[in-house]
Structure formats: structure tokens, C-alpha cells
Image (cartoon, rainbow, N blue to C red; front, side):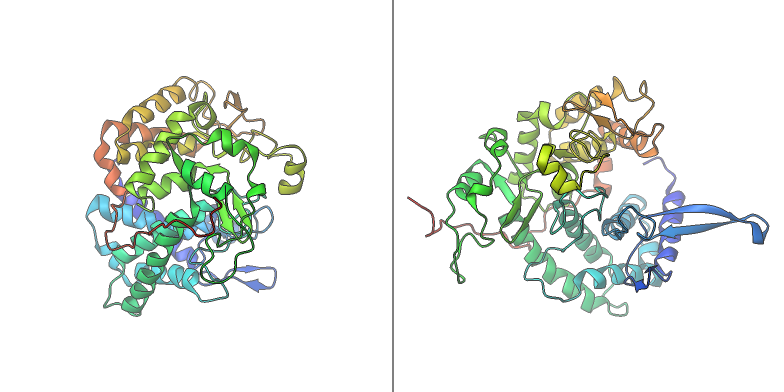
Length: 417
């Protein structure tokens, strides 16, 4: 966006080299495809102060959780670089082709799962602390979906294992599209349907396929759900539906066209209808609502950083502004983006570019928020540049693939009358 693609190219190549490291946590070896959560530059005294990179694959993280999202972001960034520069040569190198295949192989490995979604541990993504997102979190599923689509665009069929990997990716995309659009989507009508679900259904005729108990629907959802609007819920697994809103997953769903055009419009409708809840005084909530009291104790393990309306537990993160803006441009709702940017401009620089804000409205600088945060600055700058030149959206947005199967939703014989 700033005419400096070499910086991005070097980052992609350096992190690709780190992927080749042997990755161990205690005595356990991670898969070849794992990408680092972060890395730091150290000066090696034994080599006359020469700089070297030291990667963290989760062994230094709180809770020792390996990142699932970093490999997806690498693929997405590689595609963005290719789209922006028109330079196909980087993605077509043997090293990048191998890097993509290793990430795909790790994600597409066969196991005991009966769903096309990825099973994850808590704390494996941007929400890197215990927040009850274990299972099939929307953030990972949306990034997985986008990475699959980007990989399919960049893999070469004549490369080693290229055609085989492409076939596996296409098959998974087909199943994942149906699963996410059918089972993760929630709007007023679907909420009413879940509320009326019968339980303990067996066989392939079951409609309540995950045996979600209607009594498990939290009270806040009924007031939160407008008649116009909808979103992808936080998690769906056997007998469990996490009804919380997670911003990153929903915006990536729009950009990757995991959401249908109608669903994408409904997500933006929800933001307009629930502006105070999801945007507040500082864009924007990473999750909503906050968990508190006994639920907070149980879900977070009494995490002092994730108290209610703070950090990942309903905190407001300026870095997410660029994703909101990109989603607004794609759905033709630029007015929402401009309004959010104006809110951020009123305080961000004055407050010293903090990492996050606390409070139900995002009014207060986070109690442990670091200042002068690169990603807070970058989130604002990218949002601003995209509003000024919406053509930048092409770097990060994927149009709907008409070949992907659209789910056919039918009335259920198990609905009560």
C-alpha cells in the first residue's frame, strides 16, 4: 500500500526459513508446517554481535499453546503481496510452494474428526489466553477458509505434490463452505429455530445435528439479536454453541466470501443496529459480551488480565479497525467505516496509541495496555488508506466462488408446532 513491497517480501522469506526449524516443546516435536507465533532479533556475542532471529512456536507463550493462525496469515499475506505487485515469481518458487504445502498438509491431515472445521486448543490465535474458544473457534475457521482459497490460487499443479494438494484443498473447501454457512450462521429466524429445537435426535434425519439444548441459549442473545442482522457464532461443537460475537472471525468471513452476500450484509446490519455494543466509543470490541462472575472464574480460570470488558474479554482493539473498514468497503457500507475512523481519531494519538481499551463502551485505556503499539498505528493507517483508495481492498478480499456449494436449508420434521 505504501509502495515498499521488498519489506513484505523479505518478511515472507525470513518467516519461511523459520518454518524449517526443528520445533520442540519439552520433548514433543511439532509438525513441519507450523509457523512461529513471533520472533525476535538477538545479537550473537560469539559472532561479533551479528544479528540472528529467534522464533517462538509456542514454547515461550503463556500456556505453551502453538499458534494455529500464523500459518494462515502467512499464506494470506503471500497472496496479498502477489495481488498487489503482480509478481508471481515469489509464490511460484519451490520454497514458497513447499511452505504452502506443509501448512496445508498439517491442516488437512486425516484424523477422527467428523467435521471439516479445525479442532483447536484455547489460546491458539489472537485470543491467546484461556477464553473458552477451544473447539472450533470462528476466528480459526474463517482464517482457515481464506488460507485454503488463497492456497488454491497460488499452488502450481505441476509442482511436486501440487495437483494432489490442490484436489484435497478443493474438497475441503466444498465441505467447509456448507458447514460454516449452515451451522455457524445465526440470525433472528435461526435463533428462533434453535430455541424450538428438539433434542436427542438420532440417525441421518436429525436436524439438531449437534444436539444443542435450547435451555443453553444465554438470555442476552434474545435481546441482542435484531430482526435485521446476523453473524457467525463463536463456536459450534457437540452439545455446545458459543453465541458470543467475535469481530475478527466475522470480518474475515466477509473478506474471504465465506459469508454469502446476504450474510455479509446482515453482519453489517448487526453492527449498525448494535453500534453501542460492538463499536462504542472506541472501535472495536474483539468479543461481545464479556463473561463475568462465576462464568468468568470457570471459563478463564480467574485470569486477572481478562476481567470483564478488558483485554480479550470484551475489550476494544483499535487494530481491528482495518478489518472493519475492509468489510465495509466490500459490502458497500463505507459510511460505517468513516464513522468508526472518526471515533478512533478523536483519541488514539492523544492516548499514545494503546494496545486496547477497557469498559463496556471502550472508554478507558486498558489497565495493562502497552502504548505506542505498532499494530494499533497500523490498523488505523491501513483503514485510512483504504477509505482514501478503496481499490486496495483487492489485496485482501476474495470474490465468491460460484463453484462452492450453497447449502439448501429445509424445514425440519423435528420442529415443534
